[in-house]
Image 1 (tube, rainbow, N blue to C red):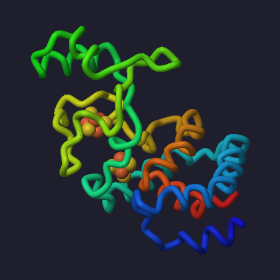
Image 2 (image 1 turned 90 degrees about the horizontal axis):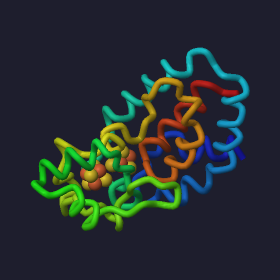
Image 3 (image 1 turned 180 degrees about the horizontal axis):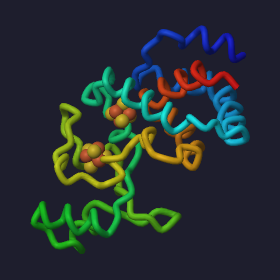
Image 4 (image 1 turned 60 degrees about the horizontal axis):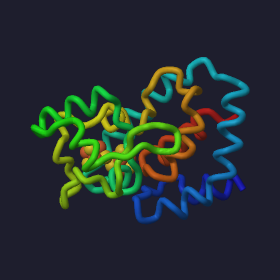
Length: 175
Ligand code: SF4
Ligand code: SF4
């Protein structure tokens, strides 16, 4: 199974249109890989992830994708809400009422997808003051990567860059 998938996606660039099938094809293999990763805790993992993240985003043009902005919502912290409302010259209470809702875990998220602030050309109309979660997405260069390994598995279904990073990680760290 692993060999077949490694062969199929080895040199293939995956875009948002073919990501659902590719992610589904690799799901079981990736789950097992993340499980082994958590068990073995490779020492150089964070450095390797940083390199893979940089290499991937050197070639990935997010403006041709925007799948994160189209399909999921960032979490809005109080600080995000205060700063975005201020920049939009809105009262915080109105910003929340117009755009946000509380999710089942008590986090503030967008009322709808795609994101209200996503323009037709895939650019973000509040880019300079977008939420922290948007600035840090998809978190693949974060320190202590193992702590977000499960989230990365989930993000491989949303973000082609994460899918590619995981494929490269499996090649660099055969477990
Ligand atoms: S972060 Fe990932 S999902 Fe979002 S636009 Fe870039 S490649 Fe696409
Ligand atoms: S605020 Fe901007 S970056 Fe964040 S989801 Fe919306 S369009 Fe995307």
